[in-house]
Amino acid sequence: MEKAHKASFGILLAVSCLSIIISLIFLIVPTVFLSGEFQSATGGSLSAFATSNPEAYSFFMSDELQQALFMLSLSIVQFMIIVTLYRFANKWGWYIGIVLSTLTLGTVIGCDIPTGNVPIILLAVGILLVSYIGFLLGIRPILLKKE
Image (cartoon, rainbow, N blue to C red):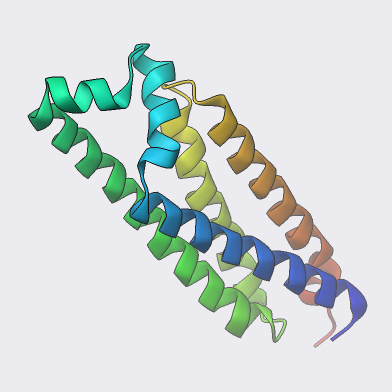
């Protein structure tokens, strides 16, 4: 494995692990992310909404947890692709990895733009940019390698 591929693999492994950790935090303690999102979208607090309208709060939490499960499942698949196909310089691993990174973090960005949750959007954009840097480092050793 040449240096560029090792660096690319390390960056992408770290990004996929970070995505898994963030997804798990979102599943275990969803209010960490949702209270700011709810406040920026409505101007009210999430705890006040939960006490004033428990049925709507349950629906809201169910919807957000579905997004977290989607992100977790894509992150786990991305991790497995990076550890198996990408590690051994398989071209399909590069293509699938970049698609999964874009889907996983693009979903977060797309879902948070309407609510205006700037910290989460910036976090997702930052992680996506770092993963793109990792994929760019892998172009030469993976896509342009002589077979």
